[in-house]
Image 1 (cartoon, rainbow, N blue to C red):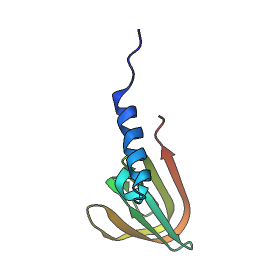
Image 2 (spheres, helix red, strand yellow):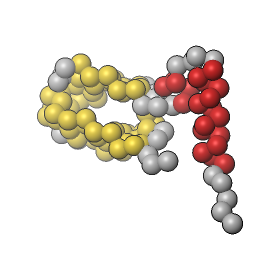
Image 3 (spheres, helix red, strand yellow):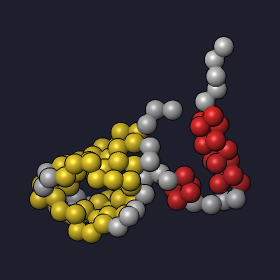
Length: 100
């Protein structure tokens, strides 16, 4: 006999409540919010931690998935507990999402 995943059920219930109340899903479900400003800056919100950082690559852990930013002369201009701004010559942004 196979057990059902309680976490999956809880996540679906959270999504249902957030949707019914018309609340912003990104904030209440902890999804990464990524804003590109051309090729010169990236704003990242709702991240958990910085996994790796050099002037050519930045890897960030989100609640469900990882974000990889590649470029040249990358600098973390500022960061707080849940948002950051990265500037430099952005060449690629890749999201590695969790599998359900």
